[in-house]
Image (tube, rainbow, N blue to C red; front, side, top):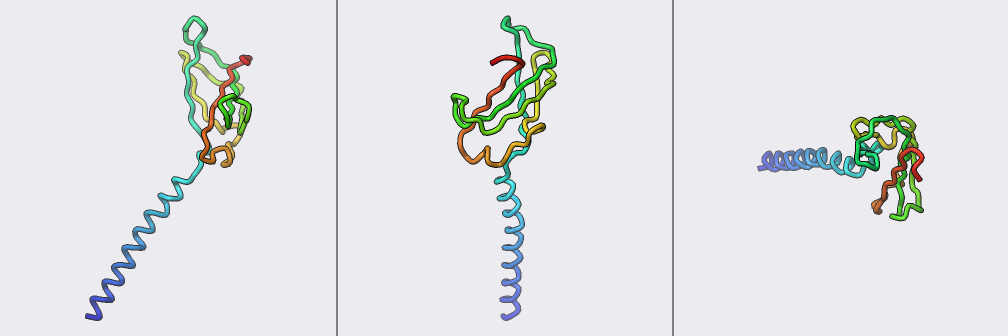
Length: 116
């Protein structure tokens, strides 16, 4: 009887340890704030024709939809646009601080070239 009780205690401890090893990495990975954000868009002329160019773009994350409370910003001087499509990694030239994403709604502003 004593041997079966010891085995069940060891088995219980092993199961708890195994569950803990799986839960802890999952919980910590869900709390991580992204350091780089992949962003893709399409640029066209006013006629609707796709652009093929390299252009400067400024990306800003705002706390409000009016674009008055900037939380982070970065300028990318040479964004390649092919057939109207561009792809950038936000945070690649100016790291995005953890404080930007605190659970509140955020808005992304994109300035293309000399556009206001």
